[in-house]
Amino acid sequence: MSSSPAPSPLLEDQICFALYNASRALTARYRVLLDPLGLTYPQYLVLLVLWEEGPTSVSSLGGRLSLDSGTLSPLLRRLEQAGLITRSRQPHDERSVLVSLTEAGDDLRGATGDIQNQICGATGLDLPEIQALRDQVAGVALHLRATG
Amino acid sequence: MSSSPAPSPLLEDQICFALYNASRALTARYRVLLDPLGLTYPQYLVLLVLWEEGPTSVSSLGGRLSLDSGTLSPLLRRLEQAGLITRSRQPHDERSVLVSLTEAGDDLRGATGDIQNQICGATGLDLPEIQALRDQVAGVALHLRATG
DNA sequence: TGCAACTGAATTGCGCACAATGTAGTAGGG
DNA sequence: CCCTACTACATTGTGCGCAATTCAGTTGCA
Image: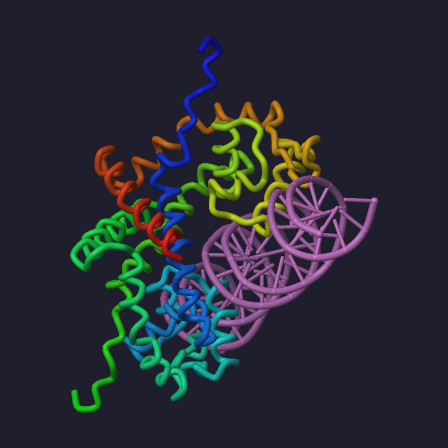
């Protein structure tokens, strides 16, 4: 008590560790479900955007997912090699790359139908709780990105 | 409406993406604060445990942080090369490696004192809100890991 | 028109995460 | 005392995540 070793915060007290830990735990649950489809979790997120929006530029994907080309370029290359997407330069602007689903990529949508239910069940929360927590967490992320 | 392209969930509706995104956003804020100290965020977490517990085995660190030796071994090697920790085999069990802070590693504790306040401020929440959110998120992580 | 500034992707380098494997050390049963 | 099983850690390989750089293509302006 005399030299007071400074009050460094306990690990479990930190919101940051809670988010970091929960995010990894959730990704691990997704891994079990996505592995049979040959997908990783970030790849699945990219497909979600493509299923929702149709053909999308790399920069637009990056905007939705907050990922830069350093992450997306190799990820998209692997999806292309897997035959799930195609990449083509936009005619009116050769700098921009348009990412489109192949038929195989579109067909995967059906195979992922039940994943969401299983994940929600694994959280141990009911749907209103999940939605409330999601909105709170999304609000924090928005505030962090906006004031960065 | 005729062929019903299947109801794949919207990205923003997903609790998983919210956690994934918030975790990365928070790590990005830490990066700005930790970079001047030559630390990464996972390295900072390891130091938090060592400041709290004192000399700790690799497996104990892994238990606290939910990280395996594949992640911790190279991370600890970098902390050792930076002169912040030492690693030594336990005399009574040569399999176990005891991780201890050097004086430089212990001194870093003081330099990290204000980080926590700055991070809390960056979330846009007040302290009770942060604590409530932290407990909810930690509960989800616990449930996910326990039922995995 | 020519050229500087800008933009969108790709590449490079480094540090996690994590599965799978390897290895040294320990413990326990015969 | 062996021999097997087990444990703790290290290593290898793959895929993010992100900063920094490069490069082709575009835009704007003198």
